[in-house]
Image (cartoon, rainbow, N blue to C red):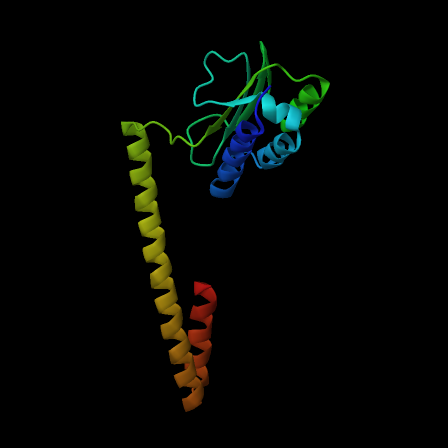
Length: 167
């Protein structure tokens, strides 16, 4: 029988994961809370970093990790919904369940770098366009105020039309 200190250690590791990471699958947060509430399941959990040789296993991935969002494997059967996993665990709990809380970032590749470079260029272009738009808007508003102060209806109408087109 497992000592309470070991069970507390597992619960602390799960809570630390929840405190520091957002699961890729939003429902996985509730699933981990379910595990924390079930002492019988918690005692049988083994925290691992690799599920290769684990017939009964749970994978929960954090956003930004390079792994599948969630699955519960029971022998040869896979469940990708937390609700299905809860039902299976409520039916029977395996003697040993491996739990992997994945936070490992995806592997680096030239294609990933190209993708990130493209995103960076798009961000820069959009940011520059947005700054230009804000600057143009401020200039138009100042000129509209001047036209109003001078009573110049024609300039006011023209500048107001330009502002509407900008927005």
